[in-house]
Length: 258
Image 1 (tube, one colour):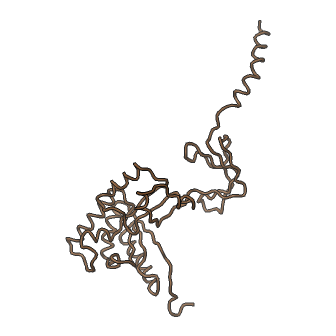
Image 2 (tube, helix red, strand yellow):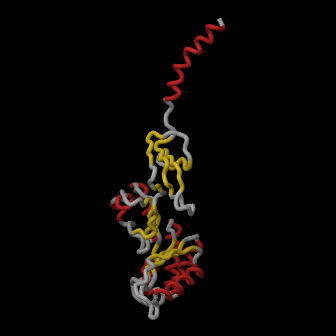
Image 3 (cartoon, helix red, strand yellow):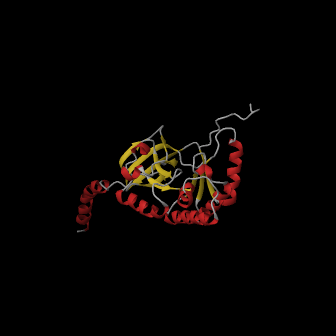
């Protein structure tokens, strides 16, 4: 009886082996042998990348198989790029596919240097609409400082009164509460060009209280470039915990420079 029992088990083993080999793949996609740009400070590292359910599930040496295997030997693989000066805030409401970004490898966009397409009080509804209709990129936005100024005093020149300043701060606070990344300025363009450093510091402090950024497009791209750069840096340090500087392109060589 014992010999018959083992004989039955031995006969079943060949049948069990194919079943074990038919296990479903561990991942949807595995990219192998890539030159991975991982942001760690190295030019690149050799690694595999596993993807499951639309998310990165493994990086390094991936032993599990993928339903689709891609040999990326000699090719570079990176996370999606981030566009920190995006202008798609209004466009995404009409077309969320963002093909122009994705075809360039951009998967995250931060808009709002020129302002949000809605007022501060409606930013929450704006985000909700984007989420309902669906968009193909990760998205965030700043709220422009000039938008708050326009609510308080239109697009005219002048120094805001204390009452107008209070309105501006209230607008920035509402934008931050709704999920804005911070405030942005494009100081070379009116009406932003009418805003004083003192005014911007006050608004940046409201953003900083919510751990927001201060992002700026500088006032001068020619002879005053270096002076404006230093002034902007001092202002940001006085007002904001975090800041970002965009469109730094000196268009004029200072006198005496080589």
